[in-house]
Image (cartoon, rainbow, N blue to C red):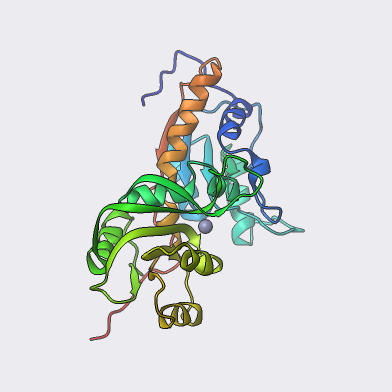
Length: 289
Ligand SMILES: [Zn+2]
């Protein structure tokens, strides 16, 4: 969407109000830190960059484009700090943001649990069609739509080898790629997904009786014990960044939609962009030769 300079832009406060209608902060887990991290609520917002991680490379991208606001999935600071001096990586990010007048806002577990949320976007990206339901429902939602992870089905069952290739094609390329645990020739039709670290949902995926569970950051022992135990789902493990990246476009579209609905002066005069910076921690994986 092009931005016209002749019409006003919404304030950061208006943008946040619209975004929080879609992803209310009180949906976040109690341990989480979501909301505005840096920025003046009174400043104008014309350009919003969506990214997974609030790291230096993303700030570079934001400054090059001239973003007024960065909305990230991951918090910059999750625990208490006593200093934001620029000689630490996070302090340097804070300094660069404030010096450039770029705001930073985080929607983390509130975007995970939302419906649609982070795992809906992952499920759709990897080819799950039809209805989705939470893998770990939020018990405070009487309608049962919200929660962590999603369960759904493929249009038609395929062998695990082909589904894994489909997952790899659907997600941004990372050095670490996609790992698979299980019989590559087994047929998979029902799928559970959970964007980000999904160790804690292995039991829920098994209990759900799905054929395959797509998530990230699985460690050796839980993954090994899981696939040694017969009858359970196969596992597909992607880069953490990659599994959450599909949500960014969804979050951007829902922000623009919410700004339009809110009828703010200049509310729709906001340009959004999805970060193309790969922020996965791993920069190289070497196959054995
Ligand atoms: Zn994450």
